[in-house]
Image 1 (spheres, rainbow, N blue to C red):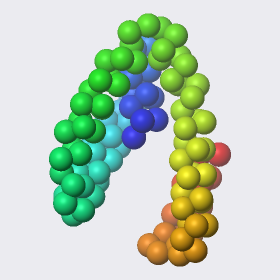
Image 2: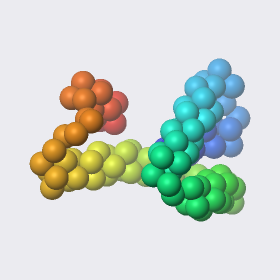
Image 3: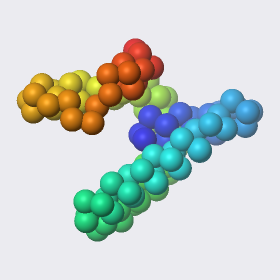
Length: 113
């Protein structure tokens, strides 16, 4: 979600045409809805307010200075790769792939790479 937020804000900040980033608001909305469902079914809706504040704060903080948005854009690849490593670590520790599909995880890793 962080990467999509940064990509969207970066393209709006630099005035790219709407057609080049129209998919990002849709993907962000899907991720937010998925996150809300996860919080709801885990009976942890109180965290939704924290995530909403973090989302809106990050949205405005990204464009306080030009170097912040540029740095965030450069760090997106690192953050995406780190999230994949965290997933691998969790799978390695639990020794259980559970609901992880090899196809979807491979596609996600390929996209990240």
